[in-house]
Image (cartoon, rainbow, N blue to C red):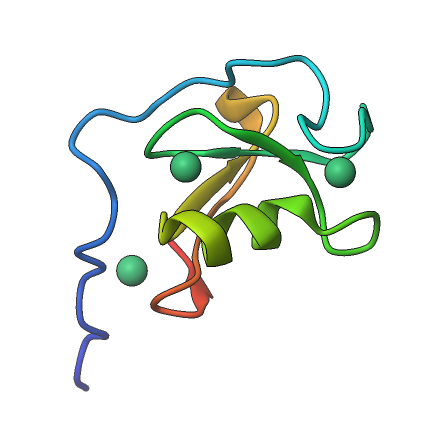
Length: 81
Ligand SMILES: [Zn+2]
Ligand SMILES: [Zn+2]
Ligand SMILES: [Zn+2]
């Protein structure tokens, strides 16, 4: 058994959401927060503004909102952490 390589993209300090809605379109459902800077964007099935933020900023790691009961996703690794 070979363990998958650990993700090295997660920032040491995780940013919390800096907005209560998607900063691009104002969506309030299925939000994701950038772990690097706290940018809030909506998910793939809506405007995909989380993905847009990743492409523009290079910030690879997002968490679902609310952050205390969700998932962490790394775009660079292409998997949940
Ligand atoms: Zn990663
Ligand atoms: Zn949006
Ligand atoms: Zn960011």
